[in-house]
Length: 305
Image 1: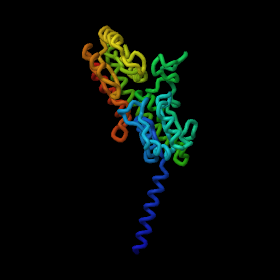
Image 2: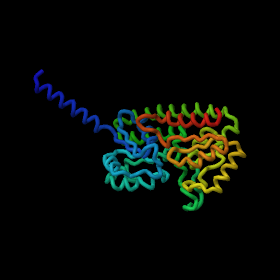
Image 3: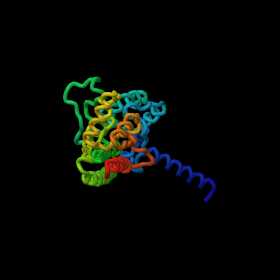
């Protein structure tokens, strides 16, 4: 083959590579957990970016300028919804100048819309005196793999809508991913069911865990925060300690981005264990089943399993 022919073939290869890259659906997810699920469902057909780190409180993510550029080139923005990201995401959407991923846009998807059940939906008047209340429901649903399975199905449908040429692949992958997530959930639920009622009592720092509590059939006896987002007072800490001693709660559960001082003190005084877990999947190095499994394993060990 002539030198010119080699060059032509090389250029064609580069162009094909560029074409393949452009063909991928560019997905931006507000958390590593959503990014991991989108990656599982989309596989090689998607290019996924997580907008926040697992060490960041998803209520208060730093809206860095580079995220504006990411969203400007995004085909699908996946958010938790239920106002979890209300403090930072709307400004990014506006600054990105990408109407497709703005509220109501074809490329904007709030994952909670896939769920068959939402916990803690407000039924009356909501105001700031009640703390950081999410009137539409508690947004921390992805600590429960059963909810993760529903989100996977929802994302499969959404990706099929955006990329109809690969619709069947997305739907099939979503079904397979959902089945895997449900299997993880069933295995862990069975392990926790073997614990006694006394062993299944926990204290939480923030009101992050209603879906996990339901999944693993655990009883929350108190929260370290008196109201969501409100720092505990000495009087409330004393009440929590009294409840822990009275009920025999042996674990305090919290995400790593919350302060640990009060939880450490309570755990020490009550003879309990502090279970500190990531707030989201460490996208790129951890899968969603590994993430929920990590939390379940740590909690099971603390409860005496």
